Image (tube, rainbow, N blue to C red; front, top):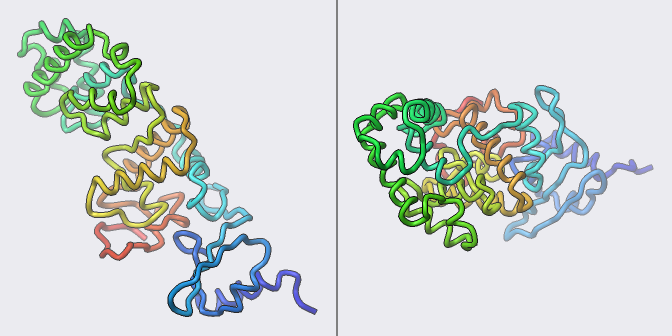
Length: 314
């Protein structure tokens, strides 16, 4: 009498015989047994795509949970479940909060309080600036350059240059926006806001997207500028060599995978940023400690036609 799970049993037997994983980076299994592709039933959904050769690719979405370290439970694919990926990261790292001001003008000031820019250095420079002088645009514009540079010193290198940049920001905010950048951006379209923000020093598309999102102006698909590779690695495999291409690919994954709400997308930004800083580092990712490694395309070896470009712990 045939087994009620005949298709699934045959799949498991085939997997064991070939030494194949139950899922690959994208939950895909390549099978040369064409009969197998016609016999798959519950508990899997599947879609079969014809290939030029005899190989067919079967894409599976697991219906049952897979248990990883730290008792995190989630379905066996992140390809179409970005919210579940974020939940897994939040379970491991904890929910994250923004360490920077969300007001557009204040963020620009904060960003220039540290160099090389990092949350820690910017926070040190911000604390020193606000304690010694304050952040009011008129105050910054009138401040003695040496005093302003001294206030920025705890934030790191080139405080004199950063002081000049702050004066440039303050002058533009006062002359073009009447001292209220946030109010001046109201009523503009997203492209207009982005263009206006990019007139300020050191603001390119990633910085403009960050301001748009965290200021609540628009729920754009903002990506952490220092680690756009994180989501790309998890869902697609090794990032491309070109930074802009990787950033746009990460943006598209967010656009396709998350609702267009400020709260959800700020949560994604913060969790992906923290994961990139702690584990999924650009040059030395700690895959051996990563809670999502069992379902990460990069950790499972998907290089997308490139030689591996980073050292990673398997």
